[in-house]
Image 1 (cartoon, one colour):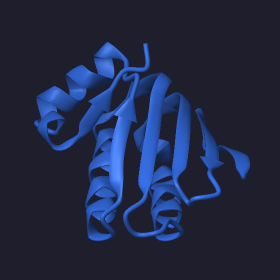
Image 2 (tube, one colour; image 1 turned 60 degrees about the vertical axis):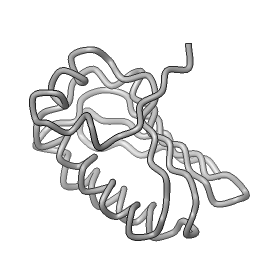
Image 3 (cartoon, helix red, strand yellow; image 1 turned 120 degrees about the vertical axis):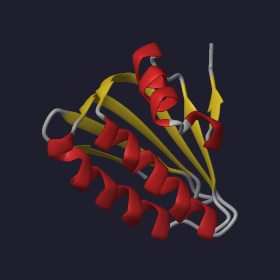
Length: 115
């Protein structure tokens, strides 16, 4: 099942596979103004996933993430851990990685590059 959600400068392309695994591709900016809506969407997505599943976040087209936006990823990670869901961040832009490093979050996540 594919669907696209727009949240004030953030576009989420959600792809839910038949096995319940989910890939979310983010485009635009994850800012304070849209981070609560994004976090709510993430929570609903994680709740609908089976235990032991996989959640992939593709950030290749995410241009900016505020510290509040990065905090949304941390909250999602905690929710995933409660359900034994693996969370992988794909193709993150350098400046977003820099913010994660500054906040001390990088060591908690699994990062992969598809290239």
